Length: 227
Length: 399
Image (cartoon, rainbow over all chains, first blue to last red; front, side, top):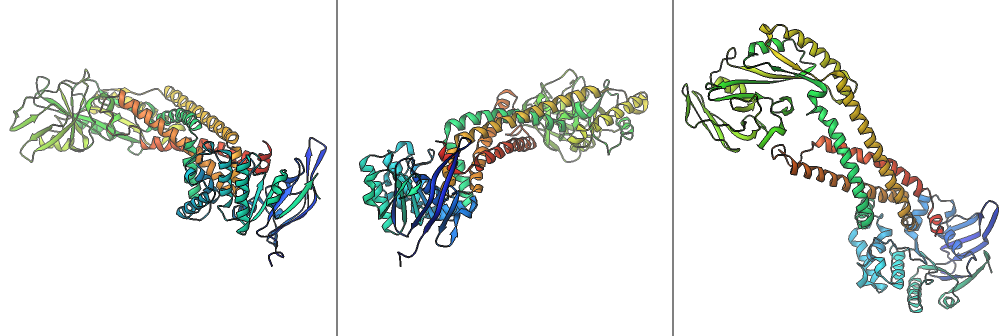
């Protein structure tokens, strides 16, 4: 049953940028991708192959020039406006960026809570959930610290906790270990893998060959095309 | 609930960005201070500056030159619907100027109306604020156990003491709330009470309207709000009134002998226009500062906003976040300016001028605060336009 259902499907995705006045860059060319619930999928490819563009298009951060992104087998999010996409991201998507993208004036726990500030969840429940996540990522004792007081690995773990706070159906991770040492990278991958086993779909993009072994499925992208 | 939490957290988070906060609180504080002073200038068109901007007053030429009947005759010629009238009357108690005192009745709600005793002429204590309050002139000395036609007066000369008039009726007691500086005209010593009680006290001491009660000054103030000043209507009315009073002056037997004080129409208009110009420049400066701040926010917080949008904040929540930051900075600047002005006034003025904790009227504070908030609007629109119109991916790609 699990194999038949898809959580997100990209169909015939094409993304073109105009660089300068006439130079057209084909970031993605007719890419198809299907993500199933609980899958840990890695998109592998060298720099400039279109990995991040694919991730941005699938997550609704960017619009494809052509193609569809069907969520839950029902709606094409490409047709949605910014308000609908914002709600989609808040309720269904978690992001882990290469550069962590934490807010510097917020403590670790506030950064984790941040995505749900606009929601109706009570402050007490939100705090309980955030504390639980920080415990899971091993940062319970670092809760009151600001990002610049944390190591790179710790910041990335905070970012993972933030991505999971809304209990998303899909986590998008864009080179999450790109700025980390080996130990920290292994820790981050273990966390993402654990989350995948719990039923969350994880789409990780990276150029790091060593990460392939952690994924359930590896897709290779080169020059904007899936090979 | 979610929006409220976003607003609350935004206020907290904006305070955490200390360097930016301090710099802009200082800038908004300077802006707020200027706005408070400018708005205060206009607010005083309804108070201290009334006589200059929209009034005329007459003062007796010498002792006993305007009697109560003469005053009544004169007031019959004034249109009550166009002018508010503030009289200063007096009667002498005992036998001045050799001894005794002069009891003066003023309109305590209009302390600006009497040129001799304004709030800023109080040396200690405070201005009278009701029926049972009294002020005395400096060096006020009245012997204790002093008798006159069956009455006796017991007086003490410090703020907080009481002075009691005992007659055939129930004694009338006044609490001395303030001591004011003497002017050349204050001889014998003055005891100033409210007009609300002046006639009762005169009756209590058997003073005769025709022969014992005199008028020291009358202030006529053109009615109407600040709009009446701005369109110049008050100037026309005051100009006409001054002409009419000059006519009455030619019959001193019926109306008494007095001199007229009125600022010329041209001077009033010039002063008003200068105030208006200053105000316009102040608001313009405010718009510039607030817009500058907004522009800097669009630079400093551009990436943060992109993160917020990426993790699911919609446009409304991002607007709340940014608006709260601007308003927090503006509010803190306004509070800082208000406290600075209040503090400066408390340190430099006499204690009495400061009858209440806050010297600036609430209207000035409310109007000034509103002006500061209004100056933030163009900046907020700029932020909305510059940040919200950009999709987060475009901001991420800028790195």
